[in-house]
Length: 167
Image (cartoon, rainbow, N blue to C red; front, side, top):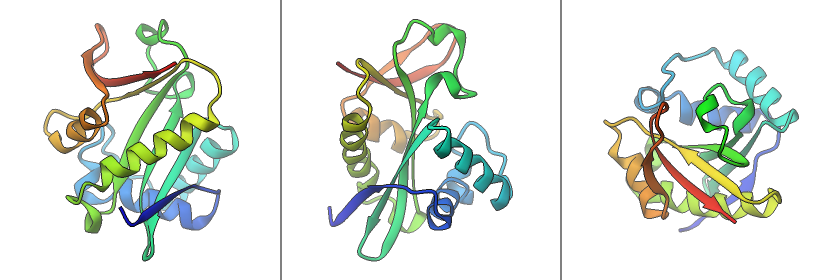
């Protein structure tokens, strides 16, 4: 892969790439919440996520610029957290998105693996449990996580997920 990854800083540029990837018409329908906020609302949300250390965003870029991101969201601070997950230690929800112009090239898998490595070196508490899910009509996302050796599982009272634990 001819790209590099870096941790996102709270800059307008990073807010923009996350917004463009996440709320692109074709990507937005693949997330559980399909509501598209205003850019200003998104910036306020992302700033809070970063400053309160609720989320770590890793931005993927190449020689042409930013093209995607991976987000690690601290489980207990996420609206996706449910009591049924309480027995899972140090849980982080993971989401990934790539600009339409960079899709279908295997970059999702590449940035997931590179981002996992960077995140794991930053998050020192062990074990780390990474958890994600995808809609049933989004097989490309499931393939990315399965290729990265995440285990597909159904959590009773929750949903089907892909999960990976690092000791």
